Length: 353
Image 1 (cartoon, rainbow, N blue to C red):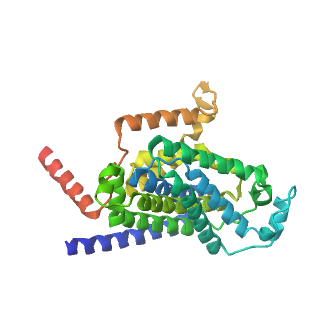
Image 2: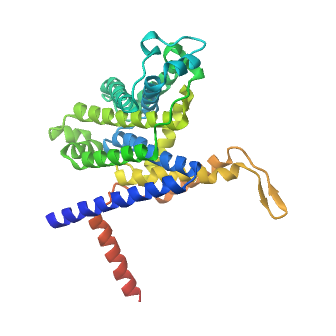
Image 3: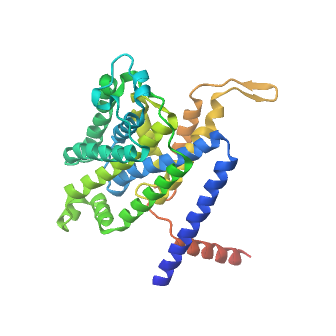
């Protein structure tokens, strides 16, 4: 058992080295569009893990993660913008004095974005998690929409509908994927720990879990806080990659998009999120041509704006019908499991031959 575990660690380390070499090669050979897609895949993995910890691992139906993304994005933007850029953004209503001249390094601002999102997650989750099911979904959705409306109206802090522009793009490929790999490692470790097993017990049957001594409020709240912190980091990275933000970016549609990535991969599975997030990101971009006119020989098919989302919704419906637990289900990747799958495939080929 110990030998197999050591072998798995060596293979994981080798995989990280190979992936690092791939990132190094991509940064030197890919064009800006492909590099942006590569970064978006990493950011959506972080966001998907934040949603999956609450909705998949703990089994709590939350729709409020867009609000935590907004908190993280605005925190990083306000703390990294220079006084000159803040003056250019806040030309209708001046920025509050405490933030007007405050500029912090990217790393410090990112950590504070995660902390503030986690604090907001606690303030929302502590009372909201005392209910469950549809009531929790409604409460968290109300929070998410309320914080968007609040961001539109507190102009001395958020600049309202005008948003914040000129955000420096600190989110390089290395930063994004370094944080994504760290989030994968931490979330996988969490899922395999005693704490993660307690969350899974809560997901399966809260009454039975409580009878076995699991503190429901403590475990659910900590899951909510951890998920909010990851969403805060993801929102901060999105602010960097877009160079500008405004409140409507973080509405219900965005939360739904992240939830779709998690469901397609598999609720409760870290591996599923790692697969589902890039898959949906690439599909959404690959289907963009459907919105544009297409020439098929003598036939010209006019483009219909929004047809891309119709086709994507159809594909999503088919995926739900044929893969009800997602592409991975609740399973996790392991080197031992991969070896067994390869061996089973080899035996099947021999029998067929």
